[in-house]
Length: 267
Image 1 (cartoon, rainbow, N blue to C red):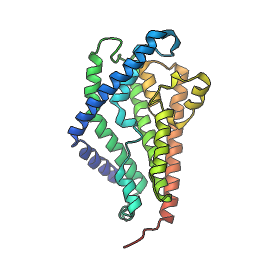
Image 2 (image 1 turned 180 degrees about the horizontal axis):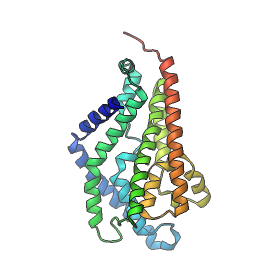
Image 3 (image 1 turned 135 degrees about the vertical axis):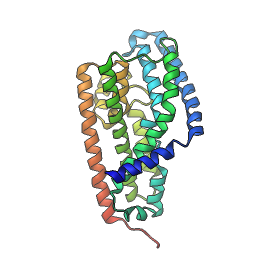
């Protein structure tokens, strides 16, 4: 376990060095967040009663989504891992006395966490001082806030375990771009990154909430914004744990098969 913590620590420290990129990202996310809120505001002014969430809850959802974008952005994958698989440099990784799945998992968690730390605080602070209902509202109580933090970390782990499937499947393909595009597009649509899941029709929403994509950002952001009742929260947390275990097991199983069949050309 200590060796994987070392990988995590090195990647986390390395990620904290990109402050200029983080500043540019914060500015971009501010503009994107304001744009989304203004678009939703136009719809709410037309007929606020037609929406399943209040406008204040939707604004909080959007600001949290922007603050923790690096946690759940499926397009933010480790290009070094994919290029190492395609080029054959993964052979060096296989020589190490570690599990490459656990090593890549810890590195991916650290990369996302370091980038989120640099971006989330400026966004959350500014959003907290914006006038209601355009800013971010405080959670209903401390229990809701603690549950939000727990599901936030769980959602991060589910996202990383899902992205790990892309890395592992890259062993079995000539190019990982096709698989990557399909995975990223699926996550963006089904996880609530484009449109919060409560805005979908009820029958469609029921199906989407049982998919692994809903176990990513959807749970934590909706718990904070107060758009889930107690029964929905219990079911969502159970599905988070279920999909995390399933995705990790599937990733490790595919990784073990890939390690037994891998062929590195050249030398």
